Amino acid sequence: MQTKEERGVLTVALPERVDGSNSDEFEKELRESIGASEFRSLAMDAGGMEYISSAGLRVLLAIKKEIGKPFDIINVSEEVYEIFDVTGFTELFTVHRKPREISIEGCPVIGRGTFGTVYKLDDERVVKVYNTARKVSLERIEQEKRLARDVFVKGIPTAMSFNIVYTGEHYGLVFEMLNASSLLDYMMEHRDEADEMTDKVCQILKKLHSSELPEGSVPSMKQILLSMTPVVKNHFTEDEMNRFRTLITDTPDRMTMIHGDFHPGNIMVDKNRELMLIDVGDISTGHPFFEFFDMYPSFLLNEEVEYGHDAVMDQIRLFLHIGPDKDVNEGIVFMKQYWNRMMHAYFDGFSEDEIEKFSLYFRAMGRFKQFITVMRLPDTDPEAKEREIQKNKKLFFDELDKIPPVAEWWPEKL
Image 1 (cartoon, rainbow, N blue to C red):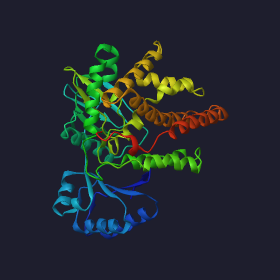
Image 2: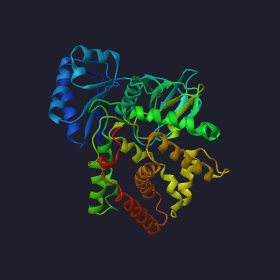
Image 3: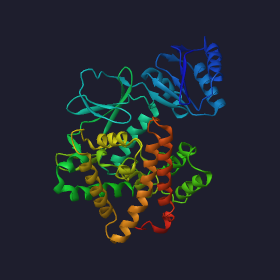
Image 4: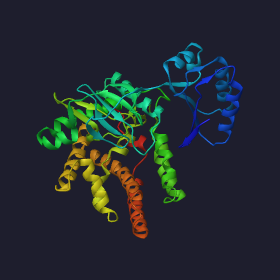
């Protein structure tokens, strides 16, 4: 029985047929495969399965009850899915149908991101192919599909998702084709429309921050941030860890949406100058403070970075779509202006002093992102890198300690 384990997920390939004649052997081999591995969750790959009888289903049910861990069945054909459905097993297991296979040969690339590449299928559809070295689970892709629907239903403009497909090597998610450009590119070309577009950005942001999702339907941003603490444990003292955790844990709980990557590169402008939010796969729930925690453009602080400065500047150029032949400082100045406009639009009605105070609180969290960026730079000079890490850590905590508990200053009407 073929198995593979990646990131704590043990995948077991199911045989072509399981019935009364081979269910005992199937159970023995399955138990041996599971017993030989430490795993957090189990996935049964039914890609090669054509039939399973009640005897085989009983084996799967017994294993599920015994392991007490997440248990998915993936790549299920329509014929086998019907068996799971009529027996009620689709209510007992998470069952994923086998995606339709498509070819992307000859399809033009129209975008690249952290998790995949976007290809144009035709004039109506694009496909986001999850082909990066970072493994993206089928469950994660299905979540992005569901979230695109949920966001759309909440009245937040976003690209409609259609179906999950398979390209022969990787999974993909088909979306409607958007005849649009990124807000970042649009505003840098149409500076006179920047105020109007920023107002529209904040309308979408406030809609997100007032729309609730059911508990447990997506991760909590508070828990996501707390789970990051192991990343920094080798650089933070226990006291520093507690100061960081306290700000997060004391922030009031909310079930409203957090986009998690809300920047002008993830907002599109269509031919009618209307905005549309994309890349909704990282949506979580939590207090709006956590959105600004992530949203502050940390590269506005990167002129202070000495170690790995060129690598950091290359990242900025990539984000701003600025080639090596152009002055990157123009883009940085633009983003400073964008941030200032957004703060005034989101916190409309508050005084300049109050808006400046809020912005300083958010900048402190931008310093945390900056600190993580420095941590992840190549170790070409370990001593110099460690000095840079310690410098940026001090800057972060100097500003973190000036943030009062969020409940004491966050505006009630927001």
